[in-house]
Length: 217
Image (cartoon, rainbow, N blue to C red; front, side):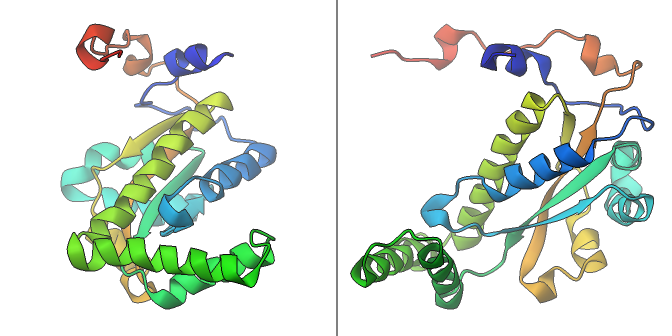
């Protein structure tokens, strides 16, 4: 498929075929998509809970209880489910951990370049911590960058997906002890293959006209 074919093929899957499973090879590709996503200052302020087991999906489905019951089947019938989590704090120690990993991976030809890079990370992080006072929101923005990259990537693999914001974030934080670990749940994405009775697959895509959204200069 070319990129436009992929974009027109993908859609928000409302009903999965529970009998059709994602291969082990594509599970590795899913992990690569999650891990290799871009983020501001390479901050990577995320954690992912990934499952393909019935027990794991049952635990994630606890986030679809009560008001959010409309999403339960999307979790239980999916082949795989990913819970995207954001960090709740971004400290100098964490920034140094990233910088040390970059150094080990050969990104700095000189020690001075490493120090400059760490200083830049601190500078931009402190803008969000102290000037804009939106550090948590900024980190969640990086998670959403990952989700956008992820949805296109899995579509390129021929895998259907449904992003779910309609979930009980507090219940999921408690189920997995996320807050004690320095994270909080943000979005859940079900993965698999569309069922034949998925009404959304038969509906035409609808987007605003190019003239409404582009200014070409």
